[in-house]
Image (cartoon, rainbow, N blue to C red; front, side, top):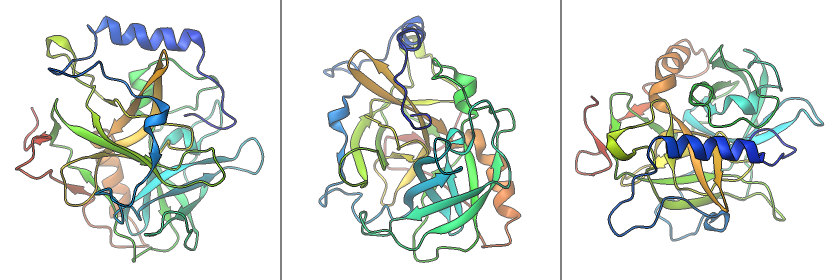
Length: 299
């Protein structure tokens, strides 16, 4: 999930991640359900009969860096007509932080997920100053994961594409929440929008322990999907709980790690408020009150 070319997660990294999960007492098992974790084969091209079909024009490809080994291709999504959220490790070079003002290209897909619309250039306007791109694939580091986000402001708005709202920072994702993951993984003859729907929330553990600053879901995720949205299911329109930034391999199974919207909400709102490109408005929305996926007030 880090920067191409891909480097397999080391055995030590897998062991650290697995040990961290086991230290918390293991993943919560819902009655009648197998242990949480997905397989890469669970991730497939978005089907036309999906409830998400035709609603993901805001999810596109992010191209950052210089040509050659320092070029990053990943995913990102519009949260306003001129603002794109993505992962910080997509924007930074190894051993360095994200550079504010760095040029970035965003390739929106529109309603046809296989046909590019006109690309738009932008620049990085917000990121966590404490984030530094890892030289090697890290183990499970909650603090590093929570810093792995960045905001790009485009040079021109894309008014014909509906942005994706973020879960309001005051909402709490419930233990029985279901997610969908979407993005543009590498591999195959062409890059197209892939998805896995109905992923379970793995952020709650035995003894009511939860992971602050991260969301874990039993979704399959592949290289190229960093920076895409982790969507909360049960909403009429796509609603992102956070930004996909990492995968954790446990044997032959995999889980997705995302940065929740509450982590970067204040900084992102301030940057959007100062925009001279578009009137952004609020990027947040409350989950519907009649769904079980999130409460209307956080603790």
